[in-house]
Amino acid sequence: MLIQRLCLRIVVLIFIFLLFGFNGHAQDNLDRAEAVAKEYMSAFLQGDFDKAAGLTHPDTLATLKQAFLVQLDQARTEGRQEEMLKEIGIKEDVGKLRAMNPHDFYVTIVKSNQKRGAAEAFKSMRQTQVEVVNSELLNANEAAVRLRINMPGEDGVVRRAGGLLLRKHNQNWRIKQNLE
Image (cartoon, rainbow, N blue to C red; front, side):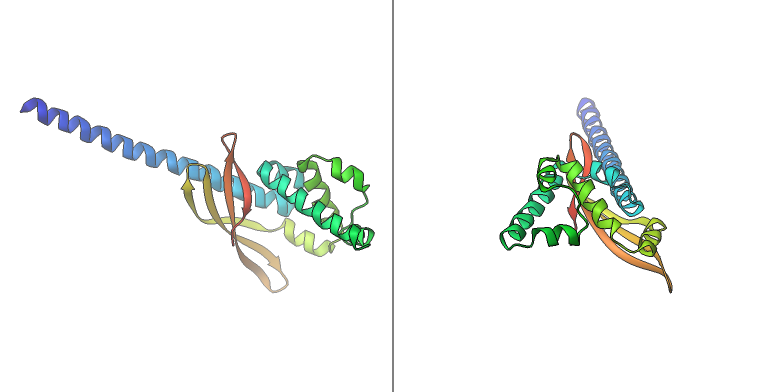
């Protein structure tokens, strides 16, 4: 009888330890996902597109490149490829664009497009603050992080809600896509 109670207590203690240990690990995992989401948004808004690309999941970078090239091919078919490239500020040769790895492609496209924008808008973006509102571990490899983006505006601070889906790549959280 004494041995049974002792065994029961040990089982209960192990269960409690595992429960709290798992919750601690899950929270640590979620904290890292939140940090990556905030770092990504801050880098993007500060114009550090190389850093933002480094925090983006490689599958997403490849998908973005492929989608852009499909649009570029469609524009070529319709005879408006040069117009499209000019519209987004791309000065690189199309062959060079196609040969770029997805990371460099992302940086080139975003930087080119950014250069076309208004200087005031980019000044405001650089002063933007990013806050984590909440997050959720969807499974061991995916997390959803909701953000509040506070951007200075003419009439005070403009607050926008946003969210990112993160997925692990080589044990590191990376941005997979925006949340709807």
